[in-house]
Length: 98
Image (cartoon, helix red, strand yellow):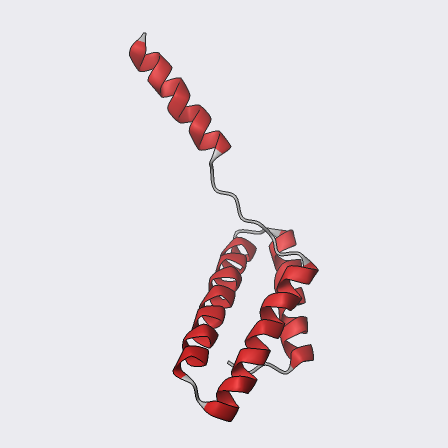
């Protein structure tokens, strides 16, 4: 009985806390990209190590999101494909170079 109860709890927790990928809203996407643009502009002006670390953190965050979207796109997720196109469009609009 205990094993069945534990198995049910594990199964329920996997369903509740399973793999969830939050697609980024337009405001969040633009916020992340604008923050990166601001930090990279400051970095070009004063070459502060703190700004360099912050820029790397933002780039890493963007790379993780786009890598997950590319993986999901390869698996046939149409929403991920649309999301990737939106990221590309916003990056081009803000003229961000990696």
